[in-house]
Length: 75
Length: 189
Ligand SMILES: [Fe+2]
Image (tube, rainbow over all chains, first blue to last red; front, side, top):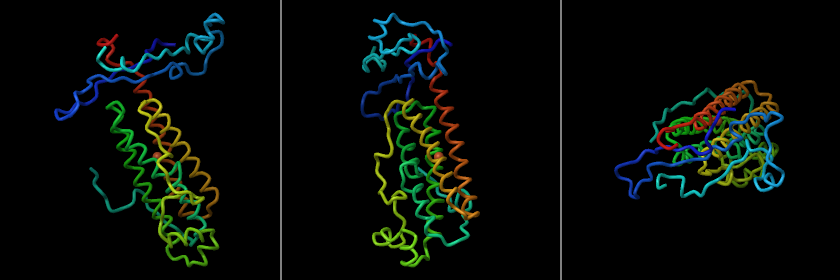
């Protein structure tokens, strides 16, 4: 599977008349299940203990989620 | 804004007076997966989705209103000269009590349309997947209506509407592919 990012950024249209200070960069999530297709057998696995923490046995399906204040351009 | 053309997107013909069929068809008027839901869902999602998908939502949302108008025409033709007795025989007695022969936004069981049929989650992927699901459900609804209808003229219009659901689903799937692509890579990674 090709490398992919789980968060995409885009620059929404900004009007010169927007009342609030514009957020120039916004983001959205693109989690791994969008890219995997039918999961092939034999993919690398987490150790059982780690899998319990991650909620999945397979690193390829792990989707970390950062707090939303890092989604815009203020980072 | 919109510009209105005073004609239907596809001609609507009804060959037999059949108020019972109107009762089934109203599902696509004011039902959960109907044309009103579709139009309002897409046009409302436009404000919180990346710019390259906005035009698609505008176009499809607008077309859904053209479909709504076709359904309205079909229902109108099927019921406009039906007597109270015919309405009652078609299972539309409760409709007649409430609305006479007027159209109303409710589903085939008479449940009024509600905004909880549609969603704007703000997450572009979640919203587009809802749109794809909605198109497939509308396609299925048209199939089941065609199965129960023996009016060839009406079915011609319904087949056209079903085909449009297929095309819309394809376009929404393409929109997901666009949003999956990497973008602005140099700047942020
Ligand atoms: Fe549609």
